[in-house]
Structure formats: C-alpha cells, structure tokens
Length: 305
Image 1: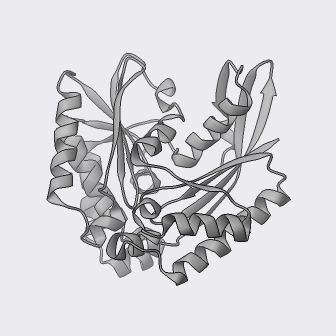
Image 2: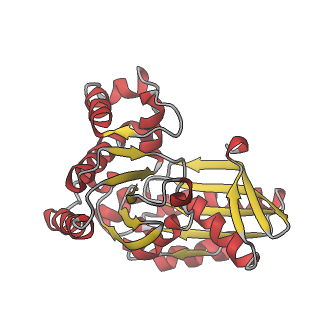
C-alpha cells in the first residue's frame, strides 16, 4: 500500500509518496516518489497578506498534478498541510476551498504549534542518544519550528514567524527575534550540554556541500565556514558556479544565519542533519492513524529517495 504527504510551504510545495509494509505489527516505509514545485507563495503572503490570482492558479495546477500522481500510484491515504504562507494570507480559507472543489485535494491550514508537532512526529530522536538533550530546529520559508527534548522526552516546542522568504522580503521583526531568543534561553538554561538537530531543505543542501559523512554532525565552526563560503559568491554565481537551483541560491543564506544564530544562543557546538521534514512527519501520522497497534515505525533509509 502507499500513503502520500503534501506540504504547502512558503517556498515550495512537495508531494511525498511512500510505500508501506506491515509485518507482525511492525510497520516500515520507504520513500517512493518526491516531487517539489517552487511556487514561492510566501512572496505574496508576507508582503501583501494575500495569495495572488497567478499564484493561486499555479497552486491549483500543482495540486491537480499531485492528485493525478496519487491516483496513478494508487495512494490509499494522504494528508495535505499548508503552513505559514497560507495561514497568513487573508484568502487562505478561500484558496483551500477552491483546491478542494477544483482538484479534489483536501488541504488543512495548520498553525505553528501543530506544524512543529507534525515535524516532531518523525521521531528523529530515536536514532540519536536518548541520554542527551537536543534542540530541534526546522527552518522554512515563513517560520522556524523549535523543539527541546531531553532523555527522549519532548520538553517544549514552538513556532516563530522567522523564515528565509520572510527575511528576504524584510518581513521579520526585531520583536519576533527577541521572542525566539527568550524562548531558546528559557528552555535550554537548565542543560549543560545541548546538541542540535537541523531539518529543512537548506540545511540538507549545506550538509551535502560540506562533504561531511552521513551521520556525522556539522560543527558550529564548519557551518560558519560554509556560510562564509556561500556568502562569498554572488547570487548569480551561486547558481552558475555552485550549481544551486534559483529558488535555493537566495534562501540558503538567511537559512544559514538562522541556524547559526540559534546554535549560538543555545551554546550548540554540533548539529546533526537527518534528511527529514514535514512530509516525513505526515507519513508517520498516517501510519499511526491506520495502524494503531503498530509496535514500531521505521524508515528503510537505504531505499529512500
């Protein structure tokens, strides 16, 4: 059987189709197909608080394509979540209704707290040392989700309106940065040593460029060096010389700044970069919904896209 996850983000929309296997109450999945379309809904939402007719039309075409792909792959269950761009757009609910009526895809606009919890549902901490304390950082186009967990237990999580598209559009505020700093300081002050977990397309790309081996962390020093290296190129050269996609070449700089800032505030020296995100959390939620008696959920990493 197959499940699908759709993420309507501020920078891109994504469809993940995963193959699901159940053996003796143990459920595993592998990523079959991943499609990413760089719509940049955040450019409209953060500047105009409204999704333009052109972007709505592009979204409708994308969702129609996703619906067709899910039908061809015979997807049995799916979940589609829209995040910060759609929740800030005054016509967000109207767009959701149009998507349902014209494509048959049911979207749900999730708040920041729910987004953080969905990302956390991928249970990255089980692959790491349960005796440690981690700050989980997911940087998107419109928001940054942060979670603290210690000894394998979630302590607290929150979402802040600081993201790469928002920063490029100068829509991040000093007040929000201050709130984020205060949250980090308050929720990490009782722990002597904190490790980082970074998720999102930008940190995945930085990790790949860094040449570090899978499973090894990025040190603060190495991440700062990568940021300086990337920032030494013009936007044009990050595309033509480094080979970055146009919609990655600009956002990778503010993303690096967010990760570095949060690592500095929390005193983090090492950042682990598992390749997961909102769509991975959605697949876990779908499995938990359809297999309530499953004793474990695992991803077969060696076969993932």
